Image (cartoon, rainbow, N blue to C red):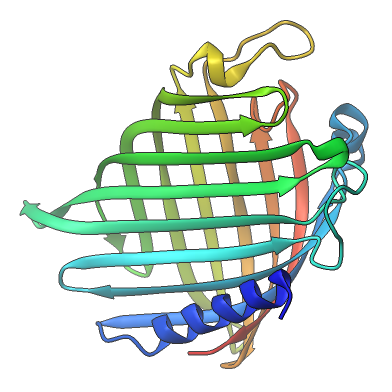
Length: 263
């Protein structure tokens, strides 16, 4: 079995395991997605639109929560293609452990690992891993759920043959927001994730084209999801980034998704 098929099989197995794991809740899905950068973003950064397959799952219990996803970007492509058209792999795992409760509000130990890697043209292999450790909480206002966090940011980068860097890279704060609701008899949900990095270090920023070294970066997406039947969810996301992703320009895209819900 080739590498792509092996990774996809492992992703499906992981999603299925999360779907059937014990806890107060659990979910899992696999999806097909298309990310369409705006014309301005493509002109400024030369980023290419791409499709990706994703396996996603999560569970929650009295001890806390666990969430993760695995993406295969440009799944039909090989290594060493034109820059932006190579096959890439992205993984994220988020954990929240309930430490205590203050005034009815949970205090959580928060951690996440984000990992992306791929092989570009001329053997330009790249690897980036972001690790955040800190505190979080879980706030509810009726159907609205907001889960903020704040932590120390540790990063490891490698771009071959250019070099590598690792170590402390400032701090990161952010949140995940979920708001399920019904309209016209349909099950809908608005979600958002947002991250702000600050006090970033020179060795990770590098010199952008205009010589700037931005210390603060914004990154996130807001989405509307529709679940017409329990097995299928479709959605549209507005993806944005500012002072991030190798550019000081504001970047944005639309992501179209269709999910098969395992549970």
